[in-house]
Length: 99
Image (cartoon, rainbow, N blue to C red; front, side):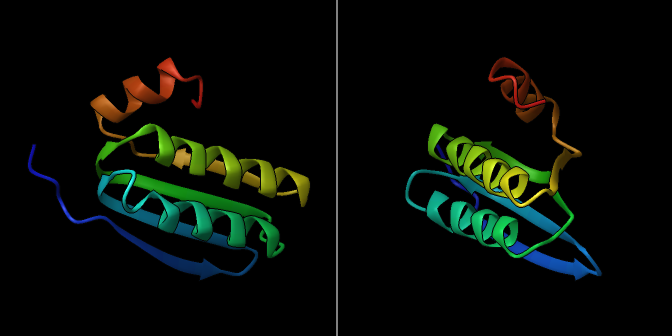
């Protein structure tokens, strides 16, 4: 399998943060996503939007990072939304009940 380089980019917009994820989120790079989402979740952002239209693959460790970020965000009275998944990513998120 050919992996597309993984990237995480954040745009802060007032009390919100938009996290753009792209490429293949494998075990080797999932910590980057986990750390980003946990940090944002604890920083007082009222809304974290995870934009996934360019995410082409995610392993269980990446899904775990999303869950960890979600829990941290909820603990700090914020909200997290996953938006624009590709059909394959959406099926995976539905199977794991993340959407």
